[in-house]
Amino acid sequence: MASESFRQSLGGLPVAELRRRAEEVRGRIRDEFVGEDGRARPLDDGERAVFNELLSQVDDIDAMVALREQVNRGTGREIAFGGTLVDRSVPAVDTGDVLRMQPDTARDQALRALESLARGLNAKQQDAIDSQLRGVLAVDTDLDVSSYLAKRLLITETPAYRSAWQRVLTENPPVLSAEEASALRALKLLDRQEFRAMADFTTTAGGFGIPVLIDPSIIPTAQGSSNPFLDIARQVQCNTTVWKGVSSAGVTWAFQTEGAVTTDNSPVLAQPTVSVHMARGFIPYSIEVGMDYPDFANEMSQLLARGYNEILVDKFTRGSGNGEPKGILTAISATAGDRVKVTTGGTIGAPDPYNVWKALPQNYRGSASWLMSAGVNNAIRQVGAANVYHGYTVNLPERWADQLFNRPVYDGVYMPDTTTFTTTGECQAIVGDFSNFVIARNGQGMAVEPIPQLFQQQTAGTGVGFPTGQRGFFAWTRVGSDCVNTAGFRVLVANT
Image 1 (cartoon, helix red, strand yellow):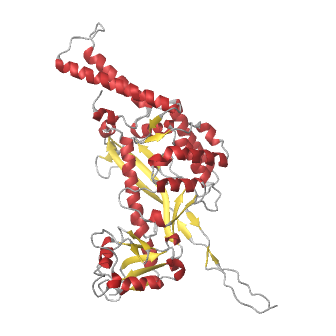
Image 2 (cartoon, rainbow, N blue to C red):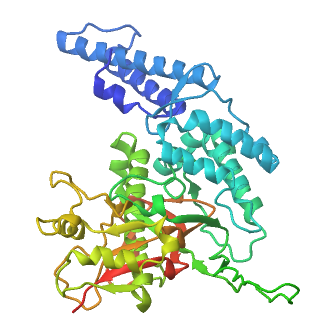
Image 3 (cartoon, helix red, strand yellow):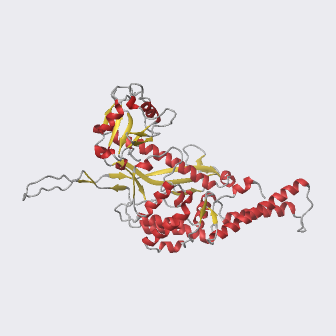
């Protein structure tokens, strides 16, 4: 049996790559241990140990190829991209047939595939995909987002597409099998079919969509900083640069006498909007790293996902709204009627959580959540004392006061962490119904474009570029956020 490190380096590799590696090992055996007459030459103890290790490597690779081929016939299990074991109980669908499917058929097949393919995801992530496939997050648009996502899942979650995606990011030029090329072509055709009628839809040529079940723009991720917005905010999908909703303060009723002419109680409708912006990530790497790093494409996709999640947490909290999502802090702190000042300047006292909770309109309290930093959470926990028994929240050994007024409290890593209030109007804690904070995503998800060669100017200002021996991953997706109803929130601010 080969070494453990060697077997781990094979995890997640497609069958074609496994076969290539097996041929490399066999070639090394022929070159180093077979004489010109075609017979094995005499070996000393050290050479024999190397020879036996190489034979074990070939045996392990051949066994893994046999397992993969069995899985592709639907009779076993496969190691999917990234090394996660998943069932393959759903037969593979021809990518060309997917393009011709009716929307309902595509959704049904994608939901069945999700049951077996998504077992590497947690329950919350599976629910997010299920909701999108069923159209729960869809809006009134010319694009059938759930149908597009279903077809994209059926195309990108095939062994052919996953191996092709890895190849185009690590090989230059990539050598694709007929099945791999067909899978890539199918996704390109799907994008053209779905978006051809949209006047304001733009994309970047040459990008390759990340397989759905590892796409951080579709699945709420748990990497890096926690992202509470993916749990509590309202998430919608759109196919334009601006999501448009409809809101109303409601219908005002009145009691009237018998036979009296009724009054017009028509509601006043408004149309809140959320602009969608492009988020980008770029990873340069040397040719040597790309060749020598096991499972390099998968590792880089994890780094891109982690960075993407981090910037979302930041911008959903404090983004300016200019060329980037507008954060909840930016939207609420700009509304004078939503600010509640602390009782004593420079500190959080026992009355403050009560005051900001009381200021929140009653119809939003039942679905409210709190967002604050660890520093503010600690200050509220310390309010409880012998003479402030009602301020007691939780024993100090607990790491976090996770409820206030029986509503959940979320950790906002980009919320202000100081409680000394050096800035007038500085926000400390937000409470409200976060269904009024909308995250809008463009339906296409995340794409990655391989940059085959990076250049750098040899002499400043000459405009002449020379190759650096580096390549790059350029990733992008489109997302936006904004508060569509500031009345549903209140924020505790400094009184300086």
